[in-house]
Amino acid sequence: MGGIFLLAGGLANVTILSQMFLATISTWSVLATILQILGSLGVFLYGMKVMSEGVQKVAGDRMRAALSGMTGNRLSGILTGLFTTTLVQSSSATSVLVVSFVNAGLLTLIQAIGVIMGANLGTTTTAWIVALIGKFEVAKVALPLIGLGLPAFFIGKDRGKSWGETLIGFGLLFFGLGLLKDSVPDLRTMLATDPETARYVESILTTINGHGFGTVAMFLVLGVVLTLMVQSSSAAMAITITCALNGWLGDVNATPLGVFQNSAAIVLGENIGTTVTAWLAALGANTNARRAARAHFSFNVIGVIWCLLLFYPFSSLVWKVANHLPAALRSANDSMAQSEIAFATAIFHSLFNFANICVLVWFVPQLGRLVTWWVKDKEMAPQYGKLKYIGSNLVDMGELSLAEAEESIKRMARLTSDMFDGLVDVMARPTEDLSQRVKELKRMEDTCDEMLHDITAYLIQCSTHEIGTGNAQRITSMLRVVAEFEEATDRIYRLVKILERKYKKSRDFSPVQTKDLVAVTMQVRALLDVALNSLSVVDGGVLEQANAIEDRVDALRKRNNKAAALRMQSGSVVQTEMIFIDMNNHLEAVANHALNVIQSGRRTHAA
Image 1 (spheres, rainbow, N blue to C red):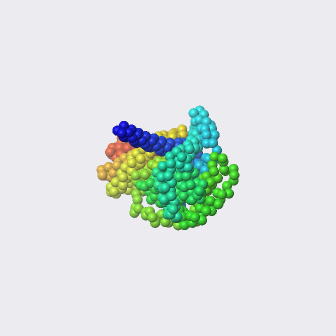
Image 2: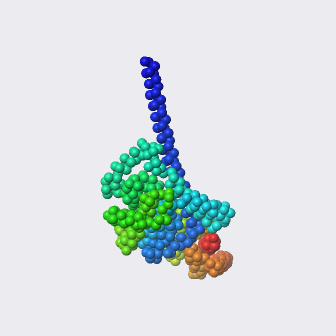
Image 3: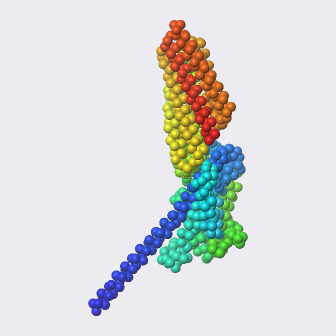
């Protein structure tokens, strides 16, 4: 009898151990599945990053020009946003870029709204790519693309290498989508392999799916959260369609329309979630940049609101369109219901954004007034302040990040020019106490020091990213330009302090001395004007003009200093003549710095 009890106890222990073993295996299986999904998503996101960087290296300058120059009206702005986002495959990246351009003053708020509208439509291409993944063997497309790009990447130079990088990125993007499709387990298959987990998921879906419009609201919130987690609406879209096809949003065969409506609700949430990146990027930026981020949020939220009001008729219309898909879009790998859900989601995403543009494009001024009321103007923002760069805070914009630095250098150039005007003002009033004006010029000189630090740090940060050879040379030249402007402002402030000392010591210039200094000052002013204009375009004629002006400055300095030496020999006041010589030398040094700016700018444009 005791033996029977011992045997029963042993069998019970074996049963418990076997259950623990099976539970451990199940846990590791779930963990392995999660890691496979994350790994697949990582390949997809990395491929998108590589492709985006390659595209920026190939067409970065043209994309910059398109964003800053092809936004004259709403239609051109929409087309620009559509074109840019289709290339970089990220509406978040385009939105951050637009906000950074507004922050730098390259785009107005109204222009930015048009580009943002186009960006929303451009990002819908991802849904079509995901929907098409099931129609062909991914390896037959992804691996040949990588194979084409690899030789160009390793052997090619500059643009050829960038094209290779683009192809490799596009191949990895396809490959990652294929891995994601295979990694997300099919809920119907799980009923046989892991029935307990499958039934648990089904019970959750049953609970969510019985609440009519409440179900739509819950899936919309899920879309917002999903996009916030992966920080990419494209990746969120890929996950949404993949989960829908594998039964994680409902039974594809039993209620295909319901599954599609769930995925459509998630898509609406993703349209809200994708605005957060630009919103965060605009934190700490100027007023117009924050307004541009709010405009992006407002545009998407207004679109989601009207679509929710018409959700059931709108989604039913899209579903009818998907029901008439050509037979060529269906393969043996997918059921008809799966094809319809995938393409219906892509159609819904595109049609929703297109309809939203058609509705709100007529209300761009009103949208601008809304965000202007939302984000108030600051009382009196200083003309020059600490620079706030946003192009690379949240999204790596690579080549396109340089636009902010270029605009900031122009601001630094204007500061230098204004400071020189302040010097001329002090020179023109030698008998007045201009202590406050001197303090103001000192603040301008300190601001220029801060700008040098900020721009240099930003350019060094840009240089750590993947950029083309030409832009690497451009960064080197831009570093030289900001250093020259900072040196010029140092010289200008020294001249101001010399004039202040001259006033306190009651040293008065003779009419001849004043006339000679004015002649040099006028030539330096002309050279600074050429330097400011050279930041846009420099050609050989401008460089010749600058060299001619600098030669005149040098000749005047030598003539003036020689005349001062002769006057001292004739009994003139030595201290006054030394101030005169000191001012001539500093003015000539300012001219040298302006010429160096022009020469560096010429190398920048040549690169």
